[in-house]
Amino acid sequence: MSEFLLKTESLTKRYGGLLVTDAVSIDVRPGELHAIIGPNGAGKTTLINQLSGELRADSGEVQFMNKRITALPIHERARKGLLRSYQITSIFEGFTVLENTVFAAMGAKEHAFRFWKPMLGREDLVAIAREALGVTTMLPRADVLAAELAYGERRQLELAMALAAQPKALLLDEPMAGMSVQESAGVVELLKRLKGTYSILLIEHDMDAVFALADRITVLVYGKAVISGTPDEIRNNPEVRAVYLGDEAKA
Image (tube, rainbow, N blue to C red; front, side):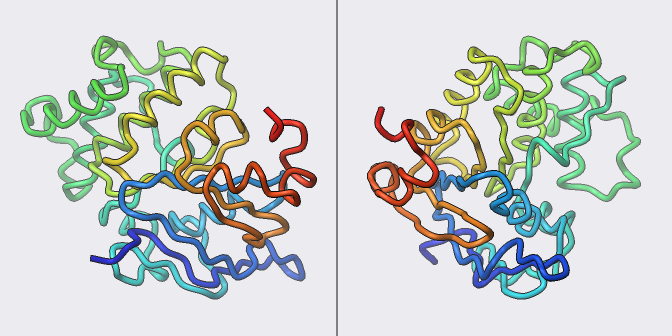
């Protein structure tokens, strides 16, 4: 088995003369949480868009489970087990938490024209959905309409929906954005539980969360991956401390 589950080689995206991702080569190993950090405008979201298939690269490769997926659209990457959460997940306001999660499980397994069969009659999919809701602590809210959820609960539901699709790798783009301190702490604990079961690529501005969670960290600056290493290596790198982490690295 390869030592990586997800890998990019010289992934590049240009907008006119602007180089947004500059020959980025990174990898995510099985069961690893690999965090991408960098200042605003560094190209982090563009990179995750290229990995998910939402944005086509101008050059370079994306490999997943030892296969090239560079040309695959977003839904085919998702069917192979590469799931992005928090930005592309569609929550149906008029469905309950459980129904939304069953719908996500169904979408990962079946053709769209079969979606309109009675969802909760599928015991296999309901079991998958309930397990995902249990992992994200949303099971007690299973019968609540999505429209009635608080902001933090909606984010938890989005992750439950991604888990119900039974991914092999998760792409998480700022999962704690807009959350309270208490809500963010809950997501950190959840991601700690998910580590080892799923490979996770995390983009996050909360440096406390990054250093608490990451097995490896890559620093992206002006579209280029300038350094990768363990949290201690990144925290103690003089250039990273001076340019990006600042006083946060001294804690």
